[in-house]
Length: 322
Image 1 (tube, one colour):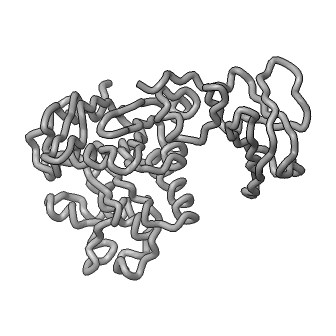
Image 2 (cartoon, rainbow, N blue to C red; image 1 turned 45 degrees about the horizontal axis):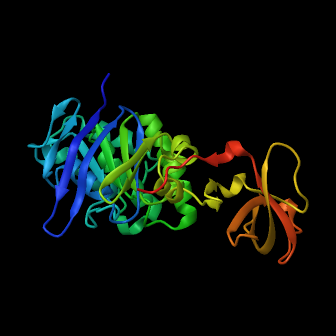
Image 3 (tube, rainbow, N blue to C red; image 1 turned 90 degrees about the vertical axis):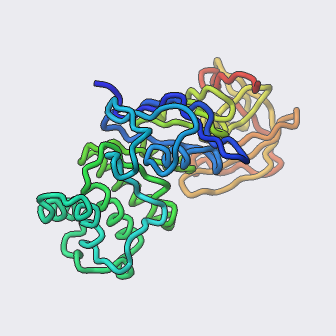
């Protein structure tokens, strides 16, 4: 079975800049796929091209193996959840959810709306208006409005950005569970590394209009292909040109034994983060490193002489920047 969505050499050029340059991508059917990258890298442009809100300058977009470049947004079996949800304030929950079905003159409207409201746990709130809902409930209504259309691909443009941090983590878990239950392919756009790593089956990391790497969260984090990917998805320590993640960097008062690499250093500071303690240290060469240790290992103080060490297998093999 082929990919549900495929981009072949897709570019989007504006008079003032090139938003995308030759993006080629396959999204597996039924996957939770994230496009991750900083602002301005082209991820939202990619979503708009798939949805039909923009036309590519070059390249082709395929849905279920059929080229869809020429199709208008309403002719493509994809649906979009926007960052601001775009709910109709004058319509109730039910009115918002059934809006697309009514425009399509779909059959079985009552059954489909009831089923999706039960799925997102909003049954009993059909008569409420968006202003009477919490941020998390509004986000669920936006999801329901798209899911009820049974799209081949659900496009999500940073849908959690408007939520406060605690609610964002809660809804994140609900979103992944929902995707597993409905089985619809999700294409999720985010600049939040933790979000992408925790939600995705696969991640495409973007930079200035290009795809830097596509892979599983484990591949992206533990086996990055470029220095940009390595530094964008997590913190790095650089020692003699070698990159090591802070959680793989250890720190001891005495030199460690065994097949490890170590450097003498001086503690410059400690940051308590609840479950972990970040210990900053400066090497004799002037390089600064951070080690993440258990909060139970407290006892490091500024000015203390220590040894920073790591295992060779924890080094990231990264090519030099071109």
